[in-house]
Length: 376
Image 1 (spheres, rainbow, N blue to C red):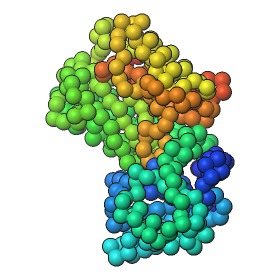
Image 2 (cartoon, rainbow, N blue to C red; image 1 turned 90 degrees about the vertical axis):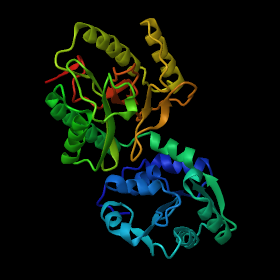
Image 3 (spheres, rainbow, N blue to C red; image 1 turned 90 degrees about the horizontal axis):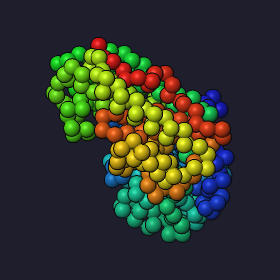
Image 4 (cartoon, rainbow, N blue to C red; image 1 turned 30 degrees about the vertical axis):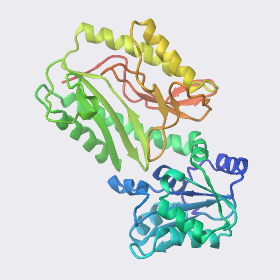
């Protein structure tokens, strides 16, 4: 692998998990694992091609327990991958003529893995690719590695945390630049476009999110021609990717001067939110934290029905395990990064926290959430 690039992978944890599950290698096809193991972040919507399992231009990465990893890809993707990846060995196939799985089978043979136990993400390998691999490699023992890779990615390296911090700062800078410009009569799409543009200008390669007035009650159908009015609350929830890693925060704002009742409601939610975030401690489970959130809202006279109260974050796809949800017994470990977002309706505060031995550390610290942000 290239020595000039910082490798962000948690190599010790990866090797440990491969040994625990008796795997000689893993093959990454899903965008989340391909990005994690390769160090490549495809810009914009190109990244979505990584999860099209029936794509004739599929991309695979083979990471062996011992030896050099290799990438199988088509010529169109080669230049960007060679520039950005810490992996040096590439197997380039001719798109639309050679099925990618055929080349992958050759690579597995070349790496001495034809009769080994190799992990695949079952949900991200097409039925046609499975048939090619089984026919070409009858002695290969294919097992599902999706949960194993979730476990590997969960504990972040210092390099990953630094990248998450940079992305969080960019997103907060975008909020700080865009929200003061909002006036009555502006459309949701106008404000959304400004936030996305500010993130892209500051270096992010891909941004998505929601933004709507609380009077637009279908929260995930926002960014429309719906116009803001004075004293509307602005709900938002954005993800801004920097080199594949997300800044992921939500900031409460009101058009003009917040009313006394809006300030009161916000402070109630803020205090529940901060107390809940403090539960992100090593050894605590997602289920226990969710129950704490529900109990705090109940004590304040509100019923918490949202399906989750937070989740881990990581490269390419922002919602990763462990999820802070009912029934999730996964325990938090030092080095995990959790985006906490226990919210009711449009009062949606969200920050990222690093799980430390002595308690959570606020990672997205650049935007003051003590009070509602007043637009204009």
